[in-house]
Length: 255
Image 1 (tube, rainbow, N blue to C red):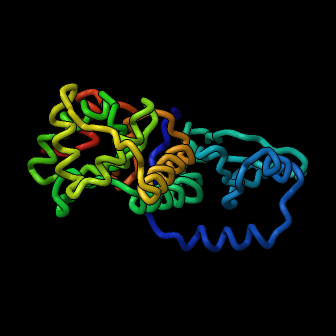
Image 2: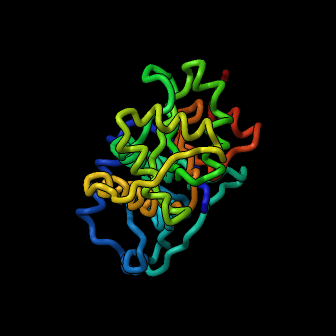
């Protein structure tokens, strides 16, 4: 799984204007050729040396494209100035990562998840979780100090990918009269959990599990736990798997 670079959250005005202008103009042939290969052009930006910059998204990653002055060739990659500063970073964050982060956060917010922690917690963390995932359980244990203190709420987006009965176990949790308590008992028991898999998953719960799995796949994820959080600057960050102690502190914030 590739790590995503930090997403900068902010105003969308410039992006809207540039996107509208981009739609109105005819794209040069080299840019069209990359579009045909799967790149989505998100906007344009100024570039030095007679180049014209295009911000593109390709397989959930941002890519800077630089059209040469003759309009016949395009360079892909980062552009650095004489001080070694990356001139591609700011426009890619503005035109690609910022709207991508907003969309991803909104999609996770609208997915089917089980809350773990207080509704009033100032920090929310999403994770794609499988009921049979030992590393999901490890992260649950790691997060206890922050969850119990009311500083963090975990939101488990339930999926079934590890074993044949994973989806049915997730369905048992979602079908419970108190999913939050059912999840707590399951995670607290660890390897001794007696959570049973539903013999027949109701259609409405199966539809929600299918939607969660589709979202996970669209985000380019293939294993659990996949953890998403906002850092101290409001940038969306991702952690794959149970984090090391130093990374855990960055994810959870101060105790």
